[in-house]
View 1 (cartoon, one colour):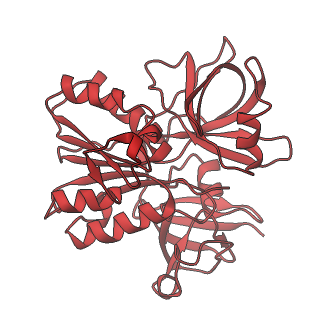
View 2 (cartoon, rainbow, N blue to C red; view 1 turned 180 degrees about the horizontal axis):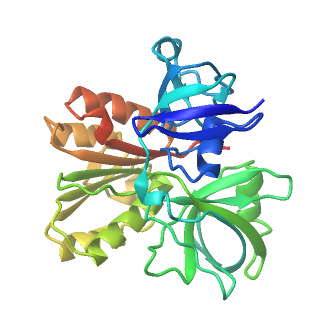
Length: 334
């Protein structure tokens, strides 16, 4: 049966229908709660159940621990109400008036940026545009009903084509198609924009942390920030295995030369002899730890694989970063 959900501290209410997660119900009612992966992996949607009960749903055990549950926490992307609820979660006002659409798109252009990274540019119907915030993502709607999520790498000011960076996961149903059968002029269906990974208004300096194709949404955020000016200090730490995996390194290097408030620190975990690498090495989040003794006055925007996100959040908070100042988009393989 449907259950009423009351959102604190705003006091707004909505109804969760049968077999509907808290997040699905909130989004249907145009209430924007924080979320990322929508499959219980990233933890962005974690909030507190003040009263009532939920079925926690399928999730990663390390993302929602037994200790979390004992504290009343739940992942709203997987939790389904089993009674009326009162929950505590921060609403994201910036996304509330952006419509989520399902649209056909044509593959306009494909370009290999690295051996295992394909850039796709999608063209919307002539009568449509996709309004989005830099950092958000879209879902590909597959014929079997499944979805595959990828971040938008372009900026809203340049929305004639949607740009995506897709890493090939061998054996991955969708990415095998992208690197095999997909061709220019193919028609695909997308749904979006989605997610709550976008730049908040603040005067605090920012550390951006990207792993691999986690650069895509950060490219969108930074391009937008430079387009609109501003004086916030920003540093991008981009980690990859080898030099070839920093597939667009010339772009942030150019930004660094053009903008005095921006610095770019590439980090390779396993540089080869052919790389002739004299730069930073190791895990990318540890390069940040080596450079910042105290992160209490910063905001961090991190995008990449779940282990990187989890380690960065834990270790950055140990260096003083407030939990509320850590924004992330976790690229969990689907």
